[in-house]
Image (tube, rainbow, N blue to C red):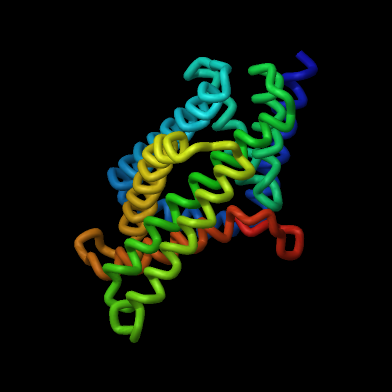
Amino acid sequence: IIKYFFKALIAFLGIYYVLEKIDLGEVFKIFQELDIVLVFISFVFLCASQFISSFRMRYYIQINGRDISSFDSLSIYMQSCFFNIVFPGGMGGDALKVLTISKKCSFTKLDALRIGLSERSNGLFALIMLLIFLCCVSNNFISFELYILVILFVFVATTTIYFLFAQTFLKENLYISMCALKYSLTVQILCFLSAIIIFSAIGISPIYNINELIDYAIIYSLSSIVSILPITIGGAGLR
């Protein structure tokens, strides 16, 4: 009972911290103008992305010789997401996830940390790949001189660094990384769709305006990459 009491207390304090930082009056005003159908569709895409993310985590656990139920995997992942969102720095949930994986699956803390890093790095790699694709089709980037060479350089450099890091430090071979990548790409695409639909739901950009949507998707991708970094500004956290 005490254990669940402290969990509920931490959750309450986290929600209170978030609510203190936002203008509730402005939030209620936005809610009154929302397209509820689009919000629901966006919510479905977001939930689907979290389900796929938990499958990716379970995949990494399984290739390391352990197993965990789909329900436990989803539970761990959702708890880590909650702590990442509400606490400064965006890393509290990752620490919780590492400790929980270590306890539930009988991993050493070092192996559990390696699984967490594998997830993070694979997801970041997928996000950068999608960002590169969006830049390739964005009218704003096409107008720059030598943009193809710049994008090609970023692609080659990112791919080389990721696979070297994965094989050297995370002990992943190419097959493992590519299998995990299909989960990561699906997650990022679902997150893109969720964000784009939310943009339309609050009237920022109509869904049928492809050029604007691509630009918003690029901004969303960049902000997602920045939010992954364990950095705080004034103690508030980048998220």
